[in-house]
Length: 185
Image 1: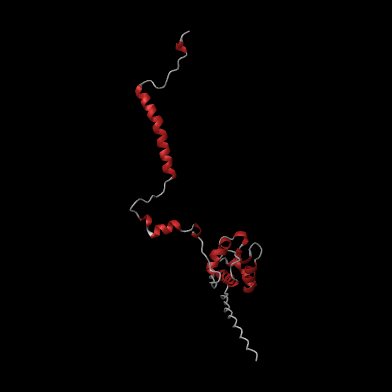
Image 2: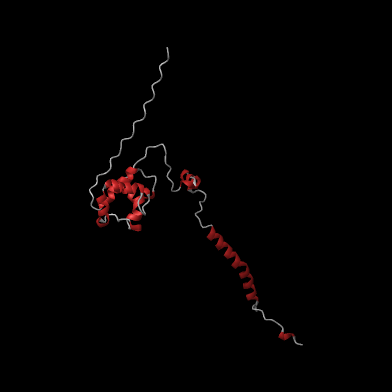
């Protein structure tokens, strides 16, 4: 039998093709690995002689991540009341700007007419306690009643009411220290 029928031909026929195949076998994986490493570690590197050790750069690196976007409140500090506009933007605009869930839109005199006719005290009570789809205090229990009343006045007046801003009660005077008992004779 002849071996000519069982021989397989190679894709590499010249020494030049052999050298190129060997180089490609080594270089292609190395280039791929280098590109992947560059892609994964693509960040700004600070070199020698740069401002990497400046006080600002060090402070930026060691500051706690929890400080991002959080405002710490002093619970013992007196509360600063928000204006009606601030409360509207924070808690009310989500529904009253779009009319979501049947909420009367800001400035829509037709939608507010019947509500304004009920009077300021009823509107304020509904805003504070909630009514139908509206949660108490617009869903923000941290709001003070005065802040809610301010936003009621803002929204009702934008629709034609003539309500006046609520009066902020004066802070209660601190209790006087108890008089020391006189010594018994």
